Image (cartoon, rainbow, N blue to C red; front, side, top):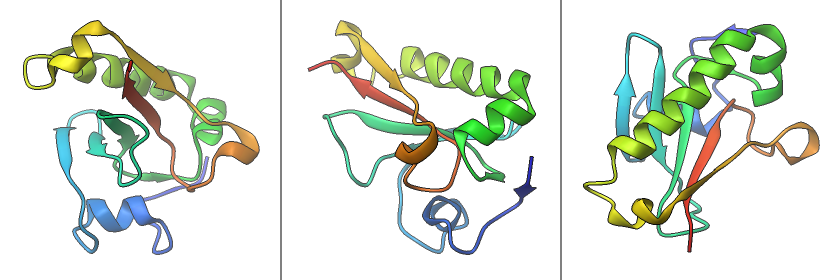
Length: 117
């Protein structure tokens, strides 16, 4: 798996480095994951759980380090559950969405969290 601390062409790396605006909801420095607000939300809650270190795609993360991939999914679930007090719309359920292959349009591994509307 090719990982870099940051990819200069990656908009998520630019957000995480402070070069571009973005809203960080939660961060786990021990695991190296972050939860950010989507800049193109598909629902009232649309977050992206991702590694802080650049990984080119969710598919690449899963193929190279299955345990880290599962840790990312667990981080996404844990954060969605932890945020229900601040985001009551999550209490009716939420969806985790992953893109593999051609549908991975932005080159950075991520798990989408969307509330059910």
